[in-house]
Amino acid sequence: NAGVTQTPKFRVLKTGQSMTLLCAQDMNHEYMYWYRQDPGMGLRLIHYSVGEGTTAKGEVPDGYNVSRLKKQNFLLGLESAAPSQTSVYFCASSPGTLRTQYFGPGTRLLVL
Amino acid sequence: EDQVTQSPEALRLQEGESSSLNCSYTVSGLRGLFWYRQDPGKGPEFLFTLYSAGEEKEKERLKATLTKKESFLHITAPKPEDSATYLCAVQAGGGGSNYKLTFGKGTLLTVNP
Image (tube, rainbow over all chains, first blue to last red; front, side):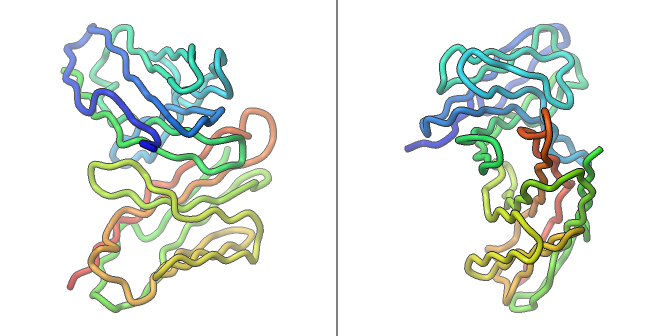
């Protein structure tokens, strides 16, 4: 039981490049989330999903897109990376609303 | 807008020196308050969930309490391995807030041997 895993662990991008971050969970959770963590800002919700095939915007969605084609996977895409998207990205999952969210190990992204 | 403020920003303790971390919150209808521990370079690790004022939960040297305005994380006789950043988050009720955790900026705890 691996819990929540994230791929890749670290990535360097040039401004304007695109990439996809992958999150996978093996706990059969319905809900999945993408957060970003910046120094002095705390964790902020980017997008979330309440089930396979659904997505919704969080607090800071601009510049990101997501997809939940399979229940166990939640993808975060950056179509045209900007330096302001340099951050650590965390994926989380939970069995339902008002339930504990379990976090992955994070992806560190540097946009030059 | 939901707000979470954690204090102090950083706390340095000697091994065995007990203390408390504070999390004060302003939300419209608290549904749950969560404490997480985060080690450098890792994801947040769940510690506790508190749902109503007066509730308390314990795990080893940690005890979390909740009032209508704030939560405390009490650390009794800490050890160096308790060194980490402790995050507090709240979940409010109603509409889209049902899914959203609002996090504080965390308290960096360092326990010296």
